[in-house]
Amino acid sequence: MAVFPPFLAGLLVIPVAKRVVKPLARGVIKTSMKLAMDAKKAVHEASEELHDLAAEVSAEAFIEEAADTTEKDDRKTAPKQRSTTAKAH
Image (cartoon, rainbow, N blue to C red; front, side, top):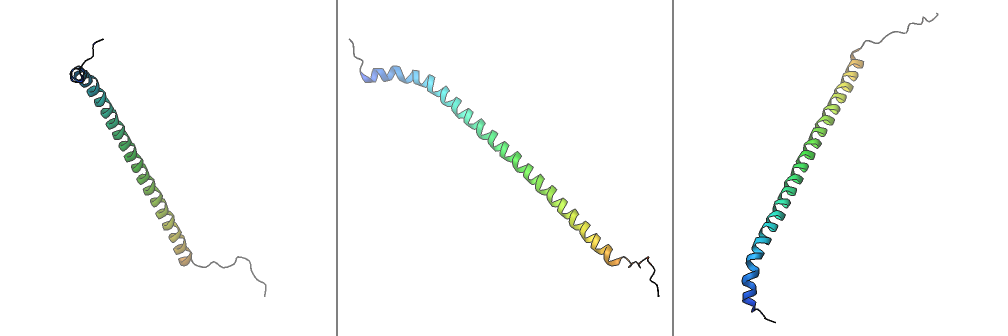
């Protein structure tokens, strides 16, 4: 039974490890970067949706407030109508 000195084992293992570990690490990093970019894109899209929704709600509130103000102004400026029923004297 032959025993290899540790440095010889290192000389054999290191080149093999480089060939295996480097592509594996590259794949892990590439996948992680893609996931991070996809997550960033999803957050950006969700943020845009929230901004759009907030703008719509704000516009609806403005329109409702303008309509309420117009109704109040119309009631103030409208002439008072007399009763159509005649009172007997």
